[in-house]
Amino acid sequence: MNKAQDNSAPAQAASAPSPCPWPLKPVISRTSILWMALALLLLGWTGWNVEMPAMLRLSAEGLADAAGIREQSQVGSGFRGMVEKLFPPAISVRTPLERLPGLDRDNLPAFSYIDSKKESFDVRINYDTLEQHISVHREEELIEPYGYLLFVVRKMWESLEIGIWGTLLAVMLSAPLAFFSARNYSPHWAVYAAARSTVAFCRTIPELVSALFFVLAYGFGPMAGVLALGFHCTGFLGKFYAEDIENAERGPQEALFALGAGRLRVLRVAVLPQVLPQYIAYTLYILDRNIRMATIIGIVGAGGIGQELKGRWDLFHYSHVCTIMIVLFITIILLDMASARIRRNIIR
Amino acid sequence: MLLFEAVYARYGNGAHTLSNVCLEIPRGQFCVLLGTSGAGKSTLLRTVNGLVMPSGGRVSIEGEQLGRRTLPRIRRRVSMIHQSFNLVPRLSVEDNILSGALAVQPFWRVMLGVSPQPLRAKAASLALRMGLDAGQFARRAANLSGGQQQRVGIARAFLLDPDIVLADEPVASLDPRTSEQTLALLREAARERAVTVLCSLHQIDLAREFADRVVGLRSGKVVYDGPPSDLDEAAVEHIYGEVQER
Image (cartoon, rainbow over all chains, first blue to last red):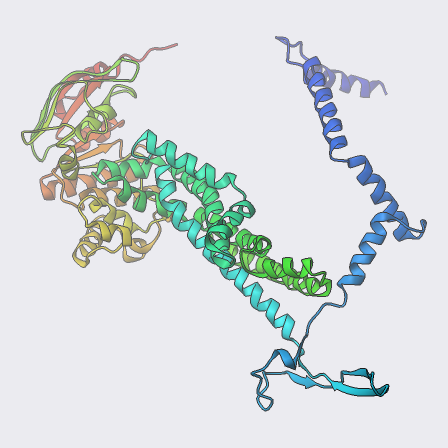
């Protein structure tokens, strides 16, 4: 016991707190507490404005409903109604033959057949004789069992194409803009300012809004979608590209300037190889995002699957909406996997 | 002939980094600049290719005075070797050597990265001369050792057969043995082509071994100018100042 005390005495002396040579800045000060209180107040106020308490109450009711504690809830019945309407998803297309005047009965489209089971009775009364005339009306329909699914996949492909071309357009527009908005390469401060503000302007306008304008100018369809995505993403790529040019290692650039090379040549040889992996990463990210956005942007009429989605939603064809959402979901999962793999393989 | 006539240069804050430098360096000379950090060695080198514009005096090469108008032409005749090599890390050794001809190639060739066969052959023979092999020639510059990278830097500097090579502490980040090899390669390549070399160094023994002439700078002034054989202790002390014990 005594010995242990003896041992611990010098150790304690070594680790004894040394007197502080100057006053230290406190970690929690009065001002930091004040700022924290202010931040909390602001959060409370804004949370009230966006109806967070009501959201919590409704969600709790919905959960209670799902658990069987409650009879009914607004959220629960909303979701239940939606699911009932959505399922089963629409896969086939039935078209009355009257609407297909040019159809060749011996040479139907692949997988399709003609269904004639549907009969309708037409009862007419001859008012002179008061006789009943029952005419059996046989309505024939062309049934394409996977018709709607194929149509949705085709529309999805169109969205992919819109996304790809929107990205291409963005790359082509942002490459020169990046050169002019990189501080160390821009030929003049006015050009620099103009390029910077153009890029910022493109970034500011959401593609859904610009798509509305492009639909007005170019009409419904993929053209408007490509333009909207292209311009919006120019705002991102232009900024990213320019920042990488500005941050590229200066040594090699200086070495080549010292050899008498001009800006564009130095940019090509000393900057581009250095920034290329990052450029590929940005562009792949934008491509990924554009394909996702291309599915949405059709809602304002800019082509692709979104346009179909909006049409079906407005017609209350919820089973068709369900098919569209399933195709969308599968596509985006596949896209995610593909882009992750490409990124792994290309960027070293 | 490289001629400095009363050259002055100053920092942004107005302090002189070079004051009244007068030097006459004949063609083919290997001239070493000695001096403490901040003595103005780099600045003097950079006035030759216009990376620093002198605030007074004139620099001329074979009678042609350096100025804004003559700069593009002069930069093609003056090449530079850098302390930190300044290679493009992700480009191959071949492309790094070929970048020495960046200013004189047609624009489309630069943009597509397609160099003419004779130039590629010349780059390869320069790489061979610098002791690199075919495997290293195809590798990325970033994957080479420091000594090998500086060999690439020297090959790049010699690609266009310059009149003058400026070497800014070319061996400062290399070990003593590699430093010696690198400087030997530089001197041989310069002798073969009768190229003037202006080289700043920190190692006095290397200066004694390789220089035809040593110029000592102190606070931007030439304080020593003579053959390396005259560089005795007193001269070194004059260049670097007395060692102050604390």
